[in-house]
Image (cartoon, rainbow, N blue to C red; front, side, top):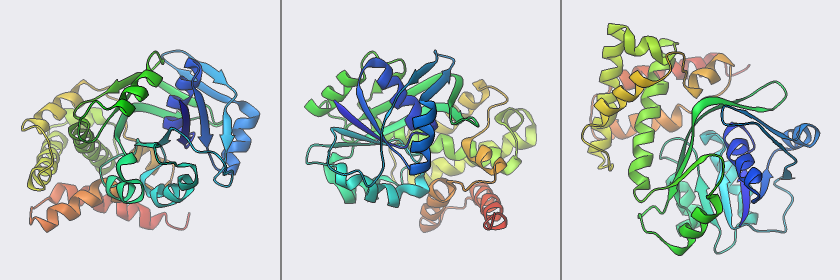
Length: 306
């Protein structure tokens, strides 16, 4: 299978590297500066699950002429409009589009652009790029979940499953990917919301009583909005996700908090902002969600010129 990965950062570089390691044909669609960096250093993964170094096949958005069997989208959500334009020349009638963006808001524009080519996807992984552009992954979890949005076991999804089989990462086919995506959306919205609001790793947020109560209210608000818009979520989702946060490493930070610490742009519009808008349309009170969103938007306004 001929695979194109839009982005070679912590997510795209990691899963793409694991597929290269397996022997799959992988190409990375990158910006010119990342291309130059990878040409010098190679694609380097430093991981709890084993290191990998390989020479990646690289293209930029102007290198037209070939289409691909599957295209991973691994960029930040706020780059979605641009990446849709960038990948269009590489799409044919049978190309699968596998998005690994956070949240749900990206699905409608992707389906508008590519129709039934779009399948569901998400990942659970903690990665970062070091000063040399190497991908550093140190936690036990490195999972990528995918599936047809209607849950069917189609010929094309079976072919994708075969392409992923044997890779040194947790590639898993789901028959209920939409629920999986909504559950991930709930979790990451709460996780990024509480850690940015408190400017703290997850440990204190579940251990300090006042912070824990705030987190519990945030989880309930998120669940209430999702139920109101008929998202396919479990009834016990807030309790299950609190248990999951309790089991996490106390020093774990959300990627949004790490972005804020680096003075970077965030995905709050795609996560808290989108859900807040849905809640307002349903006339649901979400004061904690609103406070988390406001906190990050103030940060962004103060850092807009940096």
